[in-house]
Length: 173
Image (cartoon, rainbow, N blue to C red):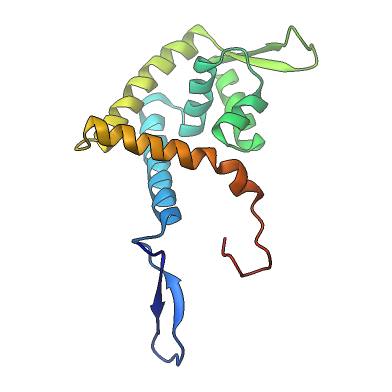
């Protein structure tokens, strides 16, 4: 399906290419991601007093205990400021602790505390229930295929970050 269509608006003499949102993949990725994040954050704040960024930090610490904030930024693709604010909030709430890295005392590593793991367990149950809800109606094969497509897109992210068109306006953005 093409991602553009020819369009002539009222008062214009010439047709031009415009996005066809029904075929433009970045539109779908952005709309799904933004809606997912906003609704997750609202729900998690109401139920547990943490937002989606705090949840992402906690989930990464459950996967990889005793890592630096920079590693969290790398894996989940958030900027340092957002992660730093979330870490400060979670430390203040007693859900994570900071300690010196035994390999490099100048570096701080983060770990979930017992209350952090307890909160993580409640959040993961809700997060996976929401995942199941949005994928309802997909067969197991479709879910596997869809996840495969997402992995392939994810693998292209380094190229996307480095993409520079030959000259401005030629290849879009």
